[in-house]
Image 1 (cartoon, protein in one colour):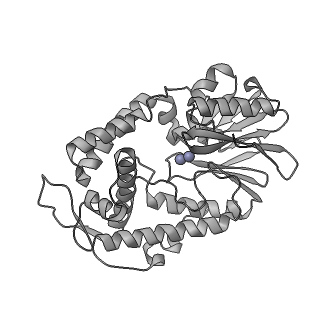
Image 2: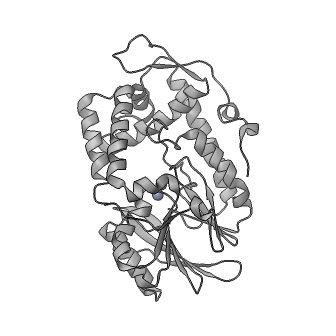
Image 3: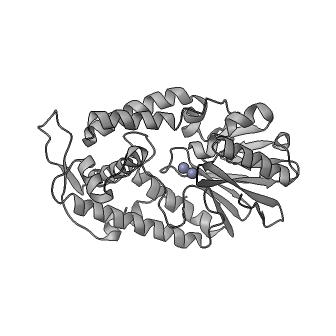
Length: 343
Ligand SMILES: [Zn+2]
Ligand SMILES: [Zn+2]
């Protein structure tokens, strides 16, 4: 069992980081912000038994009960962050919030899963994944989300003016459509936007609109002033981030290097499935699905911005093959500085 950590905001408000084993051997954090009148839980774990018990135990050891929670705010619609609300909803009167773009995922889960499964099937077929492997991957994809059932939330963030009392929110799509980071005084809750030594998972917009590399890069820039203004940055899987601006730069560099590797992989024409095998090697089941999604996101970004072309437009029955049109440098392959929208 990992230990609960305690932090303080500029005015001395208490913040607790509750470590949760959200999936076997995969840890995440929920945060409790104690504002005296209100006790706000940021993220809720996956809801799997180890995660749910970790949350309840952690709160109990700090002297809180589930009934004491007044708000549950979700950073984004990934199951390791929101799954826990299914178990919490009947046991607390806490008002639950999510961003508009992740509302369907949380509150109309079954429909969302059906829609995404169909889009995923189309993507995998276009990528050149054989039908038996597609069927298996879709089955695993659905299984990993089947333990959750839809939960009604009480409010969405844009409808609230992107704030809740002294908490401010910033919409940062890319890793997830409705991802928000939240600021309380000099503390930033960054969700999965920045991970130490790793790039958060990416998937193509063709499967999930408001995901994709372009959105993610824009969102990193939108976050930059908020990071600069924060003394403490608490993430969804690492707490706290030592030097968040450096983590942001490393993330951009890692992404740029990966995009250049992808360009090199497509020097001879490849399908997305072939290029994924070349770059990531043999993978099975869910791991294979994850790397295919990543490659799909890279290819989509590079194709949209004219780095790749499709070489077999006349072969209607076959998966699309891509080829590199030009090579570039790390800075060229990222968005041009002036194209960023800053707030
Ligand atoms: Zn996530
Ligand atoms: Zn996560």
